[in-house]
Length: 403
Image (cartoon, rainbow, N blue to C red; front, side):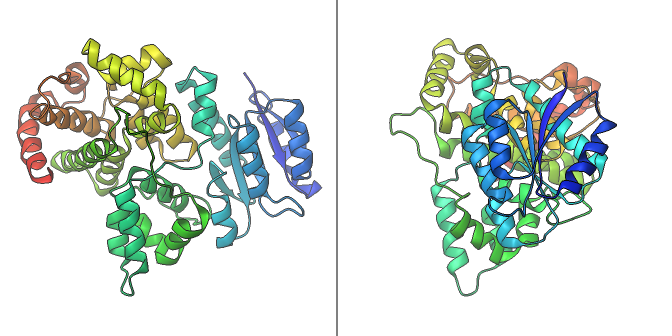
């Protein structure tokens, strides 16, 4: 089906250029055009749009204000911001409401690919209400103790961007958000950054302080005392999986890009659980209870109740935020790697093994938990099978050190 896209820009010549550009993609994209934020909101009140692409600097209602209102009133619409200005204040104002940022003028192919990719991610989720919940999230909540550590480090007279990067890399929400920003068109990097520590270094102390103090995108995770969800357990598991995935990639002789991607994918692989615990807490408590009573994996109970697992939910949000496909694939399929099309070693391979190895070690403290299983067929096709026992022993050693 054609994707319906609303383009917003106060300059008529820009809209005319976009109209001409879209002619080449008329079988895929149906475009409508508005010359102000007010006109755009009026159009969206009358029709549904899959994507809105807005200029940042417009008189009256600018792009950040427009996308904030769209996020509140039409949360299922993908929000893309175009800007030709490297203005930090504007950038920070847009980091919550915008899913992705593109430089203006944007190459037709880049704009087309961004729209189509964002829309294709919607196929990961079948429930429209769930799509709206996920796409309406401006950020992920953070661990209170990590936020406190970050705040104290930034207030220190000898604050170090290296220490800030180490703190950020321990939190799922902050890592995802700064990587979304540093890989956006506003920074214009010619390579993809997959390391939260490197991203923090590139952003610098001033920008990270503004993210913490001004934008509100770093928020504290709050959950009911009666909840069965444990943020500390999720945090510990994700840190261990990220560390194991990084080591597995190194042991398999992978380069820096794959090693960094494996760590990041491991750190973010359970992002969907954080989304569900935040936005569907009552439902998720029921899912956790169901999995425990029936002795089935949590993702199995999620699938039956929601029609999707935390893996797909997390991948959908991270994909909307523009993280690279290597990460999205690993997050989406880490429980069922055979569903993916690739059989070469990738971040998915590393995260799948790391997740199972971490769960096996967790059985020592919780022997009644469901025993995880490796996708042996996938690992054989990926050429890992003969080395699996060696990898298992190495993982046990690393896990003992991290724990």
